[in-house]
Amino acid sequence: MTVTVTLSENIAERLQAHAAEFHLSLDALVEKLLADALPVAETNGVHAAADDDNLPSLAEVVAMIKATPPNPDAIHPATKTVAQLIAELEANPPEKSDITPEEWDRLWAEFEQELKAADRADDIAKGRI
Image 1 (cartoon, one colour):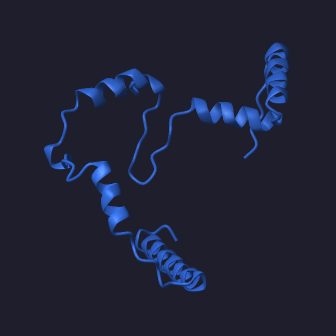
Image 2 (cartoon, one colour; image 1 turned 120 degrees about the horizontal axis):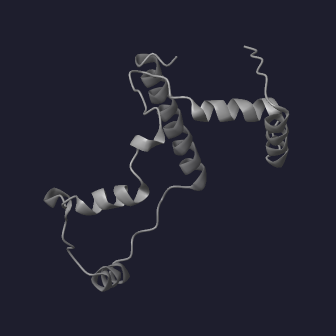
């Protein structure tokens, strides 16, 4: 869509200088400025805040994280020290793998194909394709 906007000479010169500074065309700069200034449209039922004033600052986010109590279910005490683990690995080193690099490459390629197929099925199920 083409939109014509009449600007003062001063604003037009400032825009042109700013566009040149960032190696952008004037159209690209104006589009970016407008996109950044406009509220985000609703997408897939999610609507973002129209302005950044409603978003917490980094300091507020950090304070919220610090104020969150620990989840006891997420705390798992250590079963051995690093020294014990190293001693265990030195006493019983892992066995050398019987898999060849070629076999590894073939298995990895199969795994990637399975991931791609699962992603595609998920995209189709969610209507993204």
